[in-house]
Amino acid sequence: MDILTIAIAKGRLGKKGLELFKDTEYEIIMEEDSRKLVYNNANKKINFIFVKPCDVVTYVEKGVADLGIVGKDTILEDNKDIYEVLDLGFGKCRFVVAGFEDQNLVKKNEVLTIATNYPSYVESVFKDRGQLVEIIKLGGAVELAPLMGLSEVIVDIVETGNTLRDNGLVVLEELDTISARLIVNKASYRFKYSEIKKIEKVLGGV
Ligand code: PRP
Ligand code: MG
Image 1: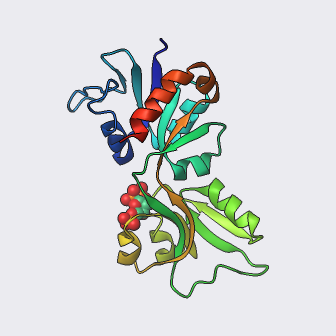
Image 2: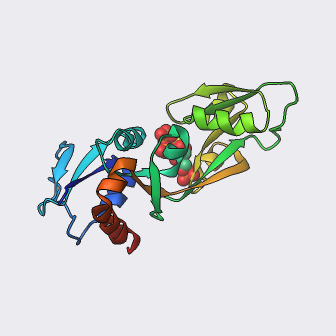
C-alpha cells in the first residue's frame, strides 16, 4: 500500500485539521514544544508535513504532498492546478472589500487603491468588473491602510468582524465564502485513489 503525504498549514487552521485525524488510524502523536516539521504516523499510513499556509498548495501541486489542508482564500489567491475535493467546514470566514462607510467602490476612469494580502485574487476580481485599481501588497494588519491613508479600501478575510469594527471600518461588499478545504495532487488522485478516498471518508464523516 502507498503511504500518503499530507501538507498541513502551520497555525490555527492546521491545528484544527490535525484534530480531524484524532482517534483514527491516521493519528500522529506530536512531541510537545518540538519544532519538528515532519511526522510519520505509527501505522505507516501517512506522513504529515507542516508548512506555511501559502506553501501548502505549492507542495500539493508539485506532488511532494499528495494531499493538503488549506483555506479557500489561499486556493483563490494561488490559482494552482490541483483538485479541491472536500469542504472541511471549519475556518469559516468571508472575503470582503472593506473601508470607510462612505467609500465608493465604482470610480469611473479613476484608480481605486486597495491594500491586501491577496494581490492576484484582487486583480482578478476587479479586472472582471473593469475597475482600474492600484494594489498595495501588505503582509498583515491591512486594516491599518485606510486609517493611515495608504489605500482607500482593503480586501481581506473577516471572521467575527471585530478587527474591522475596532478600527472604524465596515464591510462594503462580500466577495466569497471561505473555509478549510482538502486538496489533492492530480496524479496522486489517479494512482493512489483508494487510499485518498479513505482519507476523504475519515474527514468527511467528522
Ligand atoms: C486576520 C484577518 C483579519 C482578521 C479577521 O488577521 O486578516 O484582519 O483576522 O478576523 P476578525 O473578523 O475575527 O477580527 P490576523 O489576526 O490573522 O492577523 P494579520 O492579518 O496581521 O496576519
Ligand atoms: Mg489581519
